[in-house]
Image (cartoon, one colour):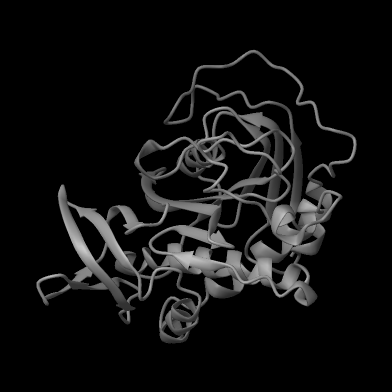
Amino acid sequence: MIGRVALMPPARFGSWFLFHHPIQPSRPVSLAPEYTALQPRRLTTALAGHALGTEVQVHETLPSTSDHVRDLGSAGYPHGLVVLAEEQTAGRGRRENRWSSPPGQDLLLSVLLRPEVKMDLWPRTTTFAALAICRAIESFNPQLNLQPAIKWPNDVYLNDRKVAGILAETFTGGGSAYMVLGIGLNVNTTTYPPELSQQATSIRLATGSSTPLDRNTIAISLLKHLDHLLSRYDEHYPQVVDEVRQRSWLLGKKLTAMVDGTEVRGVAATLNAEGHLVVQREDGSVMTLTSAEQVRPVGLGS
């Protein structure tokens, strides 16, 4: 399989796309000399033969990689397109929370997915993404024994601080449904604003490296793991959930969560066969959460 490589200038969004974004003035992204730029040809070559990475775009700057992939999905782009940006000016997570990252330091990417399974299985994609991030971190330098953990439903923690976030969205356009999987992974950032300094971390901080890490290596590993896991929507999914349980950051902790505007309090008991969180409530009842907002361990940061 031969991949197409595209090194893109700051994006312009044509009027033929379903969604249109205001065009921002073009400006180059200033990268510190020690940071390794993302290399689309290297990424595509490494991903040859995989369903993900048939085309890789690297942009200097985008408002949002996910919004850009949403537009391309509506225009008919195929499964496996990967879009990365050195900088996002309007990156977002769940509940439209902003995801910000210094230019040229972390991984900001989105993938176009057209899963060939029934749509009620598509939500499993977030589970695949979380596990792929964990595997990529663990395999970056096995001697360091990094132990990332999954904070249900869509974050990955390292040393009890957030290192990655996931946003999976489903759209209809161009005559079919498709998914946009957005991932933000902190790789080389070493300083955070005061309000985040006790909540966020990066792989570089966790390793104690005095020099920047190669983001291309981590991106390739992440996408390869994700490509493999995306073949497990059906009969192999129970093994995936088993692996996720072993890496759960929440299980056994007291927590609060908002479900349809109502606060739920209890203990994170387990993940069920679908990967949903089972909570033992304070009144002794058991509640299964298929989705929730503001999931926070009691007495710990979120």
